[in-house]
Every structure is written in structure tokens, then in C-alpha cells.
Length: 415
Image (cartoon, rainbow, N blue to C red; front, side, top):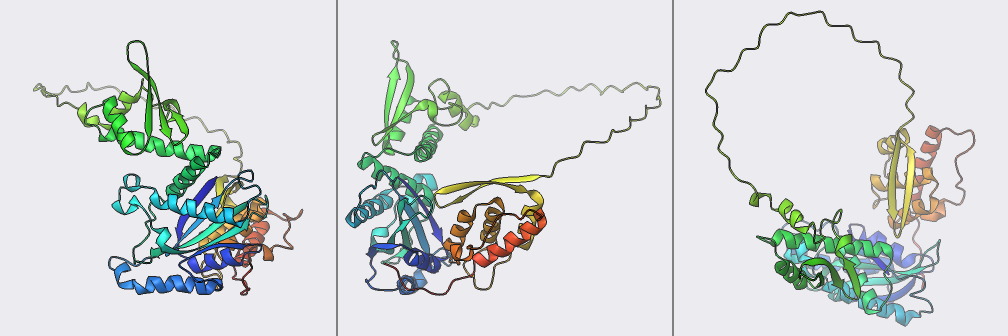
């Protein structure tokens, strides 16, 4: 199972997208009455924020007022599920999400926990248009029912860890991308342990990691020297050789890593005695005419520059490669249409880039997420025409991208 989360400013549009999406099914409402339209649900969340406006604006206005979360078990993990199973997964995930302590990683006491269980949120069951895999779509209020703000520092890591814990409790196999994310988190805490030490010791290293909830198993040779160790997180095991960078947390290299993190421990002042003798004068030399530089040979023609990037949309990654001139054209000309208040220029650019690269599904998903017309505006879309150059095709892609982000007419709520 994988999960993603981020704080957003367009909570109203995201609420409408989540609730009104085709084939969407209501899973759970928390602190919100049943039978309401999506717009009214968001108005209730705004009313809670308005109630505590004085408290929220004491330091600075709250810009990102909602939290968007997607939780997706694999097709095998959710095979044969009924609505009660999705409700239970929701409750398990929200509980795990709130209990994740990120105060050390975010270096903020407010990141110790969140309070979604006492916040307004809506959970819908969506179905991926390409794969058909079902996933939960959660839109939650950043402000809980007591006027406290749900912390959004390292919120993506919070979702990853919560998904990991729920999967561990259910004995689900972890996807490779999730495992790699947890290796990064473990590596962070290993480095934090080394930074915390005044001098290196395995005892202090072991104590720090255990204090943060990770078990440690050491492997020793016949002379009781540590030759390897494994970190334990739930039912999963992570060898030291896969942690950090270039095996720098293995027993043979970890002390050197500690020294790199504490350069002041190795620095010593050295006195330097300056010579009092006068500086030598360079002898005069006869000047000779310098040879003329050789004429440069004509260089070979340089191929057009390319822009390569990976655009992540939901749970999919789209590797794109387009001419640099096309990308600059999008950057210079992307404008947000009047009826797309929740779209930003970067959303328009990404949509146009995906259209140019042939990823129509990714482009429409971005538009959907911003509250635009999405797939309804792509029925007649085709690939680059045979007699069409890059400039003309780029202009057509940008125009279509802007059309996709225009807000569609209001629709009724689908159950």
C-alpha cells in the first residue's frame, strides 16, 4: 500500500472533484452531516476556520487550508473488498497518520502529531481510469474542531510512514518504492544519531535509534567486534549496507562518517612563523614576439537542446523529453484562464508539457485536480499532425491546456 499527502489552498475545488468524480462512492464523513453537496461540505469547513480566525491569524494568515491524502492498497490487497473494509482502512490509516511523530525530522514540536480524528474530513472511493485500481481520496480541514492547525511539515513522509505501519499490521508486502522511502527515513535518523554524539560509540548509536522506535541487531565476530547490523522497523529488516550514501553507515565506515559530521573535533591550531627575509626580485628577461593563435576550425552543428524531467501526477510518473525552445515557449506564454481560479501557471505548463509529450491522461488528471474540465475537453484530441512543426504544435498544446483548466458547470453529487 502507498499513500501521499500534501497541504493545499484550493480545498473547495478539491472537495468538488473528490465528491463529484464519476463512479466516486462516499466512504466516510467525519464531523460533517450526511446528505450535503460538496460545496456545502467545504462551506462547513470554512465556517470552522472562520470561527477561530483570530487564533489562526495571530501570526500570519493560514494559506493552505486543506489536506489532500490518497491511500492506495494494491489490487491484490483489496481484492473482494466491500464498503466496510474501506471504512476500516480509513480508520486505521487516520489513526496511524495522527500518531506519527515527526518533531525530530521537521525540527518542530508542532510536528509531533496531527489531530485528523477530531477534524472535519470527507473520504471518497475513487477508481483509477487506466488501471481500474481503487483508492481512497481524503480531503481534510487543516483546522481541527478546537481551533488547532494540523501541522503540514514533512506531511508526505507522515503519509508514507502511516501507510507503512498499516501495511505492517496487516502483514502486507511493501512495494519497492515504499521500501526505498523508508530507507531514506531510516538513513535520516542514523545520521541524526551520529550528529547527536559528542564522541562515537555503538552504545549511544543503539540507544538513540531505540528511543525513536527502531530496533537494532548487531552482528559480531569471534573477537566481539561489530561487523554488521540490521535495523528493525515493525516486521521489516534493513541492513546497514543499504542505508546512507555509498555504504557510509556500515561498521567499517561509520566512524569516518561521524568525523565528517564533527569536523571541529579534528581541527587544531598551528602557529606559523613568517620569514623576515626580503622577497626575491625576479630577474629581467628578454621579451620575444608571441606566436599567433591558430585559426579555429568550424565546429560541428550542435543538436537542439532538450529538457528532460519526470512529472508526478497522483501515483504515476511521466518521463518527458521536449525541445528546450518549446519548454521556454510554455514558460513565457502560460496564462491562467479567468474561470480557473485554482490553477496556477505551473499547472498550465505541466499540462501543456504532458500534452506535447503525448500523455493526455496525465494532462487531464492535473486539470481535474485543479477543478478544471479535465477529460471532457479532450474527446477530439489527437497527436502531432504530419505537416505540423514544433512551434505550431506547442501553440496548440498550450491552447488546449488552458481549455482543460476552465471550470466545468456544476454537477450533482454522484453516489
